[in-house]
Length: 342
Length: 168
Image (tube, rainbow over all chains, first blue to last red; front, top):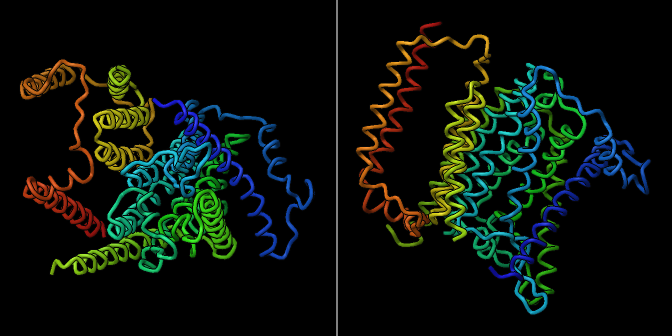
C-alpha cells in the first residue's frame, strides 16, 4: 500500500467528515433564520454577531442535558439507534466526487474518497438501510408513540425507495455507467441531466424529501399527533444525534441531486480553466448547487403543510412509481432507437 | 496474507452472528443479528471481487426483506411473557428433521467444498459480466424466475383482496 495514498485518503476522509458536520450544524442556524424570515420574525440573534454562534450554543446545551434512558427500554438498542442514524447519513459522502482532481506536491489527488464501479448502487444500499436507526430507536424506546413513528418511517421508506431506485435507473441508462465519476464527467459544461430528465428529477427530489424525513414527509416525528414520534423518549445528545443526522442527510442528498442532475462540479465555460484553478472553481460550483438545494429543502418545509399518512402512501405507490416506470421505459426506448436497434 | 487473515476473521464473525440468530431469545434481536450476518456475507462477496452481488445482497436482504420482517415483528409486539413453551416431542422431531436437511445439503455440496484458504479472484460478480451472463447464457431461467415472482405477487394481492371482501 502506498503511504502517500493512505495519508491522502485519510486526510480527505477527515476533511469531508468535518465539512459535513460543519455544514449540518450551520444548516440548523440557516433553517431557523429562514423560518424567521418566511414568518416575518427575527430568528436567533443573541449568541455572537447575527446569532452566528447559535449552533455551538445548541450543541453545548445538548451535551449538558441529562441523558435519560427509560427503565423498560431495550438499553443496547436504545443507545445504538441514533448511532446507526448518523452512520448511514454520513457514509454516502465517501463516494461523492467533490471536485475535479487537484494537484498538490506534484500528485494528482482525486477529490473522491472511494470510486467504486457500483457507486449508484452503493447510494441505494445505504438509503435502504437508512431506516434502521429510526426503527431500532423507536422500537427500543418502549413507547407507543415512538413505535408509531418507527412504523410510519419504515413503511414510508419502503414506498419511496422503489420510485427513487427506478429514477436512478433512468440516469444509469442515460450515462451507461454505475460510477458517479462517470456520471459527473458525462455532464461536462452545461450538458446536465436535468435538461434530459426533468420528470426523473422531480421524482427523485420528492423521494429525497421522503427519505430524509423532511417536511412535508416528516410523519415519523409528526408532533401534532405523535408527541415527538420516534425520538419521544430520547434526550441529551442522543436526541441531538437524531436531529443532526437529519441535517447531515439533507446535505448529502442535496449533494447527490447536484451530482446526478445538475452536473456536480461542472459549470458552463469550464474549458477555459485548467489545473488547480479548475479544481477550486469546480468545488465552489458544486457547493453552490448543494447549498441551493439545501435552501429549497428548507423553503419547502416552511411552506407546505404535512401530508396525511394515506395521502403519502397514495402519492408513493399510485403516482410516483408508475410515473417513474413510464419515464424509464420511454428513456430506454429512445436510447435503443438512437443506437439503431429498431 | 492480510486478505486471508481478513477472510478468516470475517468467516468467524459470520458464523458467530448466524449462531446468535438462533440462540438469542428475543425475536427482534434475532432479526438484527440476521441483518448483521447479511453484512458479513456481503463482506465475503467483496473479498471475492463481486461488488455488485455484495451491494445487491445488502439492498435486497438487509434493506428490503429484513425491514419488512422487523416491521411485522414490531407490530406483533412479542414479549418474553407470551413466548410459547415448546414441548419435548416437537423439539425432538425438529432436531431430527433439521439434521436430515443438513445431511442432504452436505451431500449435495460435498464436491463444491474445498478446504483451502485461498480467495478466488474472479470478475464474474462485476456488473457487466453478470449482466451479460444473465441475458445470454441464463436468460431462460432468469425470465422464468421473474415470472414466478410476479405470479407470487399477484397471488398475494388476490388473497388479500378476497379476505377484505369477505369481511365486508
